[in-house]
Amino acid sequence: MLGYIGLFAGLALLIWFALRGVNIFLASVICALVVAIPNGIMLPAALLEHYPFGPLGAYTFAGKFFLLFLCGAIFGKAMATSQAAKSIAVAITRGLGTRHTLLVGMVVCALLTYGGVVVFVVVFTMYPLGITLMREANLPKRIWCAATAIGAGTFTMTALPGSPSIHNVISASALGTDLFAGGWIGLFAAAIMAGLGMWYVEREWKVARATGEGYVENEQDRRMEQLIGDPDEAPSWGLAIVPLIMVLGVIMLPRLLLGMGDWSADDGLLARTLLFSAAQPIIWPSIALIVGSLTCAILFGNARRQIGKVFGQGAEDSVMPLLNTAAVIGFGGVVTQTAGFGEFAQWILGVNLPPLLSVFASVSTLSAIVGSSSGGLQIFMQTLAPSYLDMGVQPEILHRIAAIAAGGLDSLPHCGAVIATFMIMGLTHREAYKDMFVVTVVVPVIACLASIGLLMLLGIGVNPPA
Image (tube, rainbow, N blue to C red; front, side):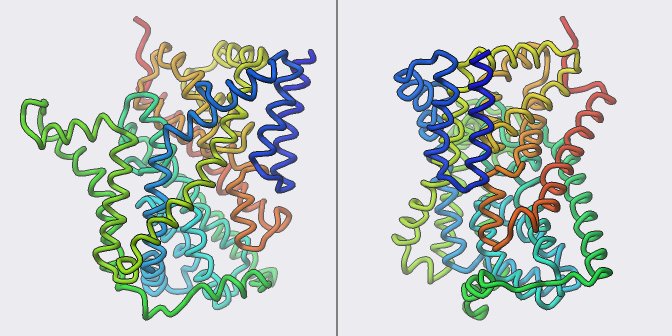
């Protein structure tokens, strides 16, 4: 009983710390101790083994995925410094107009994140531009926040095949699949997320207009608006989109070529390169992101003239997101050593649910506990995924369904990404969390359950018992 009390107290305390804005490193270590001590885990084992270096250790995760975070942050910095990201945003804004302000926010964020630009760079890029749009359209900020969250934090993050997102890479690395695994069901889920999400925010805007709710400026808006700069200094949108095309091309072209024939290492350098790309779910997307960064340096003078500074600042920008995620996973590494977690794992595997629904339940629960989709997904892949493979769940389907499920209940109020987004936009949970909850929790959950329902209806995704 004492062990269960410690487990739930540690989880509750982690959520409370997150909502209070306590540093995640301190919070995760303190909460790990709250879990460990009542469960009889000795301090040296908790702090020097399970938290840092175990299969779910913070440093284990950071070491494995450091290169991907590094290359992603460098690419995001290159796109921001060159103003290529801003150019794309401005071009789409001019093309769609303020009447479609919400669609502009969603499309730009989706395009940038699918192309490999990290979420926080996208938010910083879009919000100063969004201020102008919100002012012109008299759009409440809470609704703009939700629209950008649809593009940056839902379907491009977990559902769309081929994306170099950390969720896609975690699944591919753990299961031996590639970034395109379960592609068709991912497209189905993405369509639901985008469609339902946009329907909701457009409906909310209509209600806001009817009730007289509109845009209200605050001090944060005035500070952020200074970051817009001169649009005339940005490259043309046609040139600005080339780095994104390069990233996606490097990822997708090998997949297309591999599908056109049988290749072996004896077929020459091209064949060996193609086979290498398929076998390296971490290295290959990282290479693609570096190709995109170098493309920025070649095409855009303001990035080329300070390439050392851009790459250096990008490397520095990668540290905090990597360590924040690693800290949550380190806490999970201690949790997984408790008897309570073992009993939870046995219970969830023993519940009389179809395997894919059981996958949804287990991944969703883990993501909700740690307030992180990537953290919950990594814990699932390390602890429970092998059992589902033994049940006959096909690796490609497990890859995609687990990734989609991770992006649902992760966005509870203590989610770090939610808190950071509200801080950037000068919003509070009271003002904006209802809309964020609908588009990043309710809609992804519906999309995941609908995808599972379609797979079950078609009778695919789970191999029949031998």
